[in-house]
Image (cartoon, rainbow, N blue to C red; front, side, top):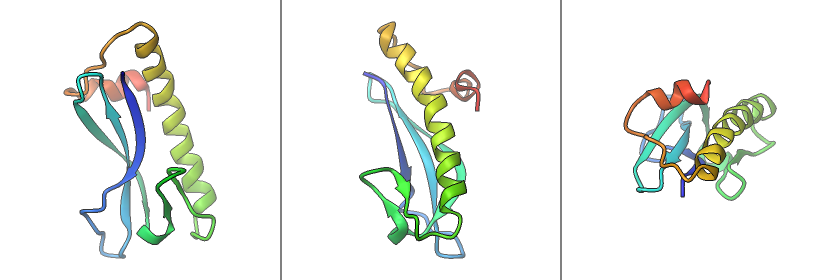
Length: 101
């Protein structure tokens, strides 16, 4: 089954101490591709369970809105692929075009 998650890249820290936020797309063959959402957050302000930025962050409302927008678009694409029992191809960048970010 195809799936999506919003994650932070814990292995990378920007100069300001924040971590970049990514959309992780995994297909039914367990191939994974991550797409930058151009959002970053301090690790302590990231809620892993809800996949959202804590309200304590300065731009939390804006950034969470951006994350939600990307997630919803990707979720529609993944839902359609799951409904049609198709494996999405995460090897190529054209997935982003189909998701229409």
